[in-house]
Length: 368
Image (cartoon, rainbow, N blue to C red; front, side, top):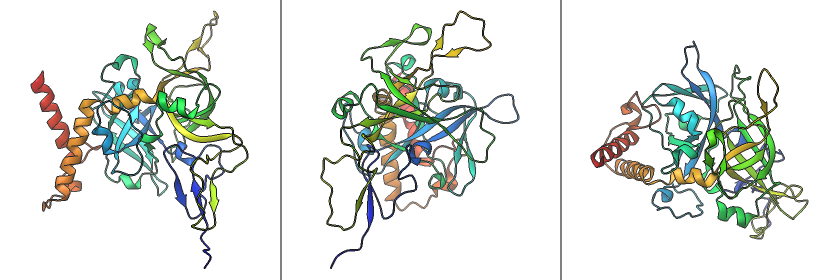
């Protein structure tokens, strides 16, 4: 008997296929909702009655197997009990250290939520190049996480040099980013700005940036402005195939697309995570102007450098301890309620997260 099943294989993202019975709302959109929903805004405590929103952050879902690795890179797929990390620019995280800060995030019911962070929040930076890699991560596990209207970036969307070569990503490919527009913050919801551009340079060597520092970076033709620091940057693959739609419609369970079929829209394919926004260059004008002139070229922290932060030994050990403690708690007869026993001074973490962090801190101090 013929099946009446109608469905959609949604293949816009490099992290893997998504299956839908009906087309998602952003099925034909140039920039999908997942990009706009990947960000939240960072507020720094100032001498003001309200938070001052200064930067952008995003969430990353990481499978436990990543924390069981050494430094070898693998491609990860599937849902393996993902851990969630909050990522932003290093210079944004450093402004959060030693003072209270807040995260402004949308909720699925249409409201807005402020998640407060404290001065003792633990941030991880690049283990060997902290001054030269403008990125940082922290553990993210607030209460009511499932209620937040945010789409984390899967770790398997990250591209390193091998993936870039395999996918033929390069100069001229379309890039886009989402982040905070500081002129529009008095709204009932986070409304991120989306900026589009193109991949302008992939140096393959360190280049000078601020204060003469040599950094690993990609350059994109996309104007960065205040508030976009830490914004995730995505690249859309350019492919040779033309004319197919941004999804594959199926009308029976027997219809299986060929494994090498890429989803393309007018010659473009899947979307990958390229890295995160650092800042911009000011153009030398020789004129006395009220403000600097943005050159319109922005350096991007490569995704593989952010991956090195995530895979560093200290964070790996912390996340393994968290996973082990959570597993023991799940399979024990203990009746402790994580929600009621979570320390108030650590709004990002549950009791098992805090215990694991203390273990790592004690071990590190003993070694010093």
